[in-house]
Image (cartoon, rainbow, N blue to C red):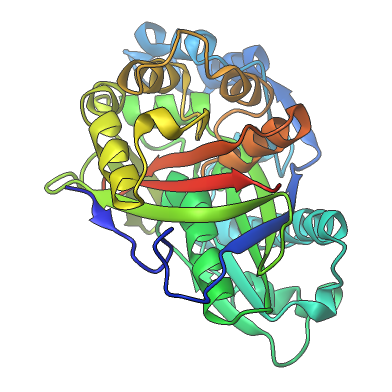
Length: 364
């Protein structure tokens, strides 16, 4: 059974009001690369050293990606980089994207940075201590007494998990303003030394980006966070994650992710929704993290959706690739522009192996 996340539940304590989403923002770095260009670069880097490359190169063309954004020009990724160099690139790129996404979200919400009471920062592609929100606090204009909540290790599920955490914090302090920012610089984990399928697939899928959301309980906003929950499957640690070595982060990316999702994701989501007092039929639209074209197909199957129902997910994947945690907010942004239905379930899969799900109810 999925574990109930009881602190955000439609059966909340008397007088408690749900957190409302007041605004969101998204950002990508300036270097845009065509997917075919990336495939050509990858062939030059791997083909002579890795005999299986030609067998795997098709993933660049079948991933459903047209273009992606990176924090640095292609030349930077064509040389071996050590951990300090990767960390320096992560810091600069993440700080810039944090500021851009956060400012967009605050502007959309009509909120000043000085009004923010809590900042939740979600990132799993680099290590920053002091954490990112502290590094940009002066530029952003955060108050000295702002509460800081940095979160690491949630991978692709970080956007959904971070929104759930931010909603709980907003509910716990009625009237307070919570800013949630998720930044992933996946490109600093591109590796030339790892000659294996997981690394080639990661090179074909991942990109850089950021997203932010502003929440406050008691407001109407765009929508309210009706409920949230998560589920971690036992004995699945090797499906997705990082290996850490002196060179940097090396991807753990199992080929069984799409079939695993097709078998297990739907029942887990049904259990999470049941803990909220909801059924699958109560959801008007699923807003899913688009991990890749095969994952999108698996999600449509396991959620009993019509083929091509996850159209915004495919469009985001085509335009931006898999940016890990922020990506689901790019989908939500498009859904908001198109007009949210009455109830949306926002979902993502991530390391653990786990899934997170939130029910969003459109403001009246």
